[in-house]
Length: 543
Ligand code: SF4
Image (cartoon, rainbow, N blue to C red; front, side, top):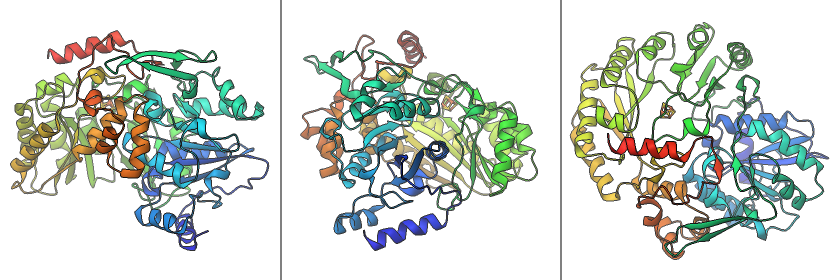
């Protein structure tokens, strides 16, 4: 084992509070893997929650592993050190189960890197029975696991806190891997990609999905009915995260709004609220570690007990997401930590916000911004998107004008724009829509940056468009895209990898799809009819 890498792992562990160390003997050994760095993974409440949930079971030991940063990755390769779990330093390939928690498409290439680094054959059928079972959970598994189908033995389509106990019962009762796989076919929400054969027509579109050995044709997404009963909470507090030493509490799961570009409200439907007592109990636990508490939920202004929670004088609260509107303005005065707040207008004109069904007006945005500044908040972050369906230059000018109006309200602090490129997501009305061309997106970003360059106190950040297109490919891709990921580990360049596979990225991301086309994720029952989404899509296009 490489001394440098072990020392680095120990340094991280020494800063943590809440780490679980268990004797692995006679237990189910699970390596929980986040396919990005420690910093990113440990900032993810879902990842942390699953660690706590698994370790709360007496016969399970769960340890963590992450993608090494570039320096450590070189050290692993240079010294031939396989990837190991932080807690016990055991190599990943000695665990019974490797469970990946996957939240972002751009992490897909890292999954392949991690499997390689762990000396585990990449593809599910190539792994003999002595290799760990490799499973996938996290939001990407909910809506389109197909681009990763070759690498995973089982995908959890839905919320893991609902499904994990049943899956582990099945694991305990099974004699071997093959029994686990076959048993998974009758557990609702578990998807075993190896039991399906996909066929393609002459144009490259999916012509058939053929379940083998009585595998179910449709996989129904699972969700936890009462999130007050979940065990998902912060397990480990460490300064080495995005929220540095903050204890995160999930107050809401799902979102009552219905923005047409957004997948969150669809995959976490129905929206659920944690009972006030349950949140207060978690705050008590948090206070034994830190005063800093972050409330998590996609639209916390809609949490009915938010004011009661924020009134707690012992806690410094931070809220991740606020919706522009009068309710939000009221909440701000209850927050102690008011250094910086974010709101998401998403688009610059009323028309464009109607297209995406954002349901906030310019008045809402200006009223909220004014209230934020007058309550002492100096730094405001605004989220926008470019490349949205039907977007024109007028909509881009709308972003520029809106930001200038907001900046004019206060001379202190800064207004930061965070701009991302629109990427179509499965189970949204825009799942059929192509991405805007790279050239147009670049021009629109340039237009915003140029117009705001000389306005004092405005900073503009945006994603790298070429990675947004990669995200698009993995978001709406089918099984053939697995090959791209495999080749990418060698070349690193996704466009070259697409060419090398004989695929065309335009086929996936630049083509408007028909209602009747079989989409790669159509086998998942999300609880929303395709007709409803299509109607919404047509409405958006005619707005
Ligand atoms: S963008 Fe935000 S407000 Fe809109 S549906 Fe998604 S989570 Fe809800």
